[in-house]
Structure formats: C-alpha cells, structure tokens
Image (cartoon, rainbow, N blue to C red; front, side, top):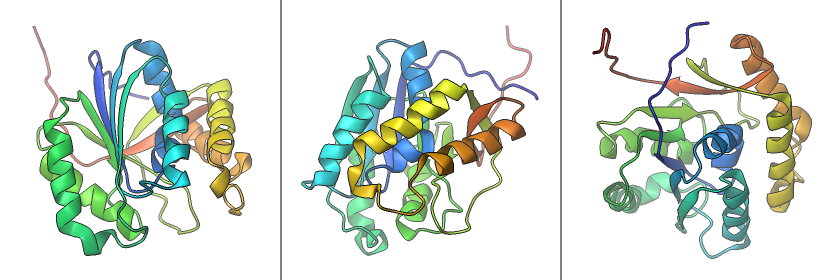
Length: 216
C-alpha cells in the first residue's frame, strides 16, 4: 500500500446534506483527526434538519465525534429530499460558508451518490472550494451506489466500534431503519480495511489532486 501523507492539518471543512451524513461517512476519521490534533478547527455545514430534533442530534453527535476541537456547526432547513429545488439557496449558503473558513482539507459526499441531495452537494462543493483537496465520503444506505474509493483512512477495531456506538447513541431517530446497525457500519469499515491492509478503514473518493515531487 502506497501512503499519501498530508501535511499538518489544523482546520477542516465538513459538509453534509442531512444530519448524520457526516458521522456515517467519516465519523472515525473525525475522531482520528481530533485526537491527533488538539485544537483542530472544524467548520461544518448541514443542509437540512435545522430547527428540528435532528439538529439537536447533530450538534450532540459532532461534539462527541470532534473531541477537543473548536467546532462551528451550521444547520440549514432545506427540505429533506428536495435539495435540487433549492439550488440557489444552497449555492449561496456554500459561498457564505466558504468565506468563513480556510480549511486544509474539505470533506463532502461523493459525486456518484444515488441520493439527489448528496449528489447535488458533492457537485457544488468544488465550485466554491476550487483550490482545496476535497475528499468524498461514502454514505451507507439501501441504494447500490457504493463507490470504488481511492483514498483510505485506516482505523483500529476500537475506533470502528466507537463510531458505531456513537451513531446509535446520538441518532435515536434513525435506529429503526433496517440498515442502521453496528453490523452494517463495522462491516463496511472492515471491507475497506481489507482493501487498505488494515483492520478497519474509512474510504474516500478523490476526483483531482496536485502533488509536489522532490521538494526542498
């Protein structure tokens, strides 16, 4: 396995269409970054759920997934499943969000996601974050849209299990879904671990990157 080692990461931007997308797609990665970099600055934008119990779930969840980090979270009230009809508002919200942060890394849904809300956000993210490394996370659900990822973040068994535990703790509104269980979450992370020669991993899709070879 050939490693891609990022320079010091002090600030990240994370984008989700719905409350729980970020935690499902990259919860273990958030735990890893926050623990390795005390004082990490995390700017988060979620498109839907504002003013509902889902926003309360999201705020409590991301606080636990980003221990010790400086977390700034904005939750909008775009109707679930209707993001394409609110293109202008989402585009404007992303522009405002972009001005308020200077991230070293950006995380968003991946472009091949079958859900229209996820896919729209994935398509709009690089129009605002034009000079950033954008990693597209995968969201486990019933659609058969699992991507062929190109970037992996290895995680330990304990971390994979902690992610699953925190998901169940903080998103009680979702626990009735037949795919929302520990076996599903740890099963996917184990598969990604096999593909990256580790016990568990979270995987990301990378559309474009610039590398510098033979630095000073």
